[in-house]
Length: 79
Image (tube, rainbow, N blue to C red):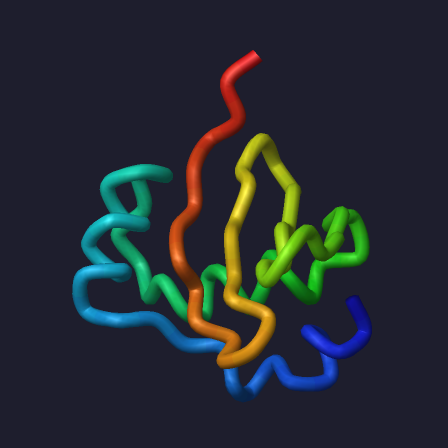
């Protein structure tokens, strides 16, 4: 978890990732900056499962590749 925070400057995504994330969590601002702020938020629950980091905060779950820090996707959590 600290590894993700220590490498926050490496967090990125692809053009397709940006569009997918904007649609999935209904945001219009800078996706990477938005996700970085969520990661750095003290209330975020960060855990690793397999090859991915998962960040849960504000009813959103974010999936990030643990090797290259690429944001794969983000979804709202359905209860």
